Image (cartoon, rainbow, N blue to C red):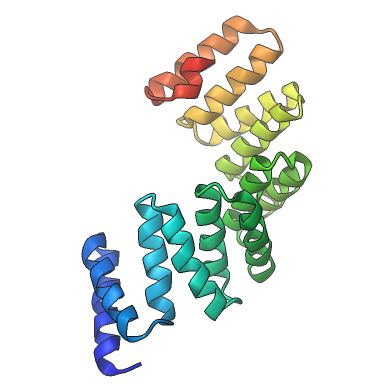
Length: 214
């Protein structure tokens, strides 16, 4: 990489770290005009697009980065997340598998793998991935939350309540856990308790459409 490109890249990284995504985007695209396969530029552009909810664009940039450096765990993880967020769960699963193979001790990667498996209704697989995340980080509220939600899908309602409670013991501000517990209580015909849990979810997240519906 030439000194000029290196300087541009440093400017872009600084802008990105400062939250000035538009400036970083412009600089990184200048870098790519000169060097189409500049790995840091592709990776950071992917992160910028994901942060702006432009998930298909994010997946495009990150996919290009992954083809250049397929053994980078961070790129595989971010690509898998972007694919999931763009609705492409099937392809995301492939990259989640690569991400955890490259970085098996990353609980966030296992959590994300589980979410994608859940989206594909592969609930038993998802439970295994959440268990792996929890084996690495036992107080991982988001993993407990998602495990509870998956148990609810498997109609294991008592277990779903128990895991929602574990998640809430760690983070009582998780609106999703209050709502998930409410849904499991509803299935157990504990309707008054279910309504109270939905109310609590809505007090934490007033625009939570699923809680309003339930």
